[in-house]
Image (cartoon, rainbow, N blue to C red; front, side):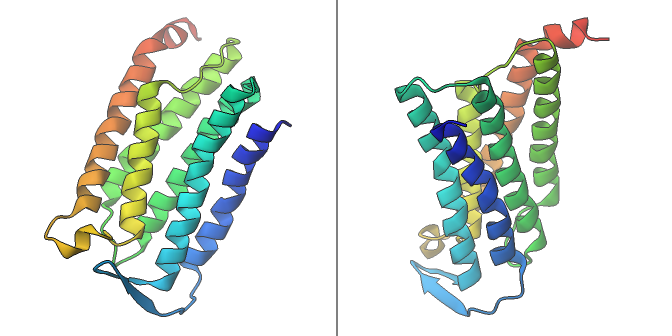
Length: 194
């Protein structure tokens, strides 16, 4: 396994740590930062989520720079993104003092399952499709929205503007758009599969 793929695996391994920090009944107190009041566990969980998310850029950059792009990486990288984002969104629905509507989370996760299913069909046909630019924008929109929600709308808490909620809506729109685009470009597999 090459270094970019190991970095991708590290993103997957950070998910259980994130979940334990966010869901275990730790009482580390609360903190106030840039106008946002939040439990320390949410701040630590957000830092872990952001660290895990940045590995998405690091592994891709490293793989392209040193010509280490592999079919395993093309499959594993988006899977790691989907696992991280899905875990974080489900946690956000469970946490009462963060507003993450379950219907938006269901739309986002459903798209991720649908695209993963199509990727499996494509792999069965011998095609491995790397994420396109729209998919990358979708992923970063999701990461920004989730980070903002985990950090209780930090910075924007000082003004009457819910950036975290707007970011979540933007992430949902890009999620739907990129899913439609992915299926439109790969519909030949659905037509030919039996």
